[in-house]
Image (cartoon, rainbow, N blue to C red):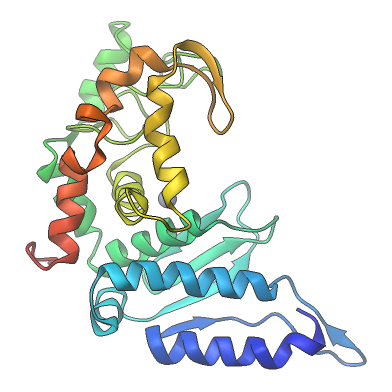
Length: 267
Ligand SMILES: [Zn+2]
C-alpha cells in the first residue's frame, strides 16, 4: 500500500467493518522514519470486499452474513504452502503472492463452518450420503482398491487419491463433489461446495473457475488441462461429472442452496 492510497484503504476497512463485521489487520502505515507499505495492495482490498459481498449476497441480508460468521479478522500470515487458513472468527491469507476470490470464499466458508462447531460440514457429509471411516479406508488401500499408493498419494495421473475414501481422512464422499484429492475431507468438501455454489452458472469472479472444475472431466485420459494438469479425466467423470454437466443437479448444490435460504438449521 502506497501512502497515497492510505485514505482509500482506511475507508475500505471502515466499510468492511461496518457492513460485514470484518476487520482487516493493516500492515501498512507510518513507520519510525518512513512509510511502511506492508503486503496488502489496494486491489487486494477491493477483491476481498467483492468476494465477501458475493458470499453475503447469497445469504440474503448482510445481517445473515454477520450472524453466520459472527465477525471475522483477516490477516496476511506466513502459512507455508497453503493459500489460506481459517478458524472461528479468523481468516489468514498467505504472505506469498496474492489470493483469488475463490480462496476468499473458501476460507470464509471454513470460518462460517467453524462458527457452528464444524457442524455445517458434518451436515453436508450426511446430506450427500458420505461418511468418514479411516479403518475402511485403510482396508480399501490394503486391498489395492485405492487410486493412490499405500497411505499416501502418488504424483502421477490416476494415482492422486481421488476415489471415495482414498484420502488421508478416510472420507468417503457421497454424490458428486467437483473434485477430490489426498487432502479432501468433509471440511474441505464444505468450503469447496460453498465456492462452487457461489460461482456456478453466474458471471462473477468465481464462475470461470467453477466451470473449469467441471469441464475438465470432459477431457480424455492423459490430456493436460491448463489449470489442473494431467489426469485420467475420463475415468473420473463417473465420480465427479454431474448429470448433463449441470452442477445444480448435485446434492452439494442443493445443500448449499438450502443452507443459505434458511431451509436447513445450522446448529
Ligand atoms: Zn480449505
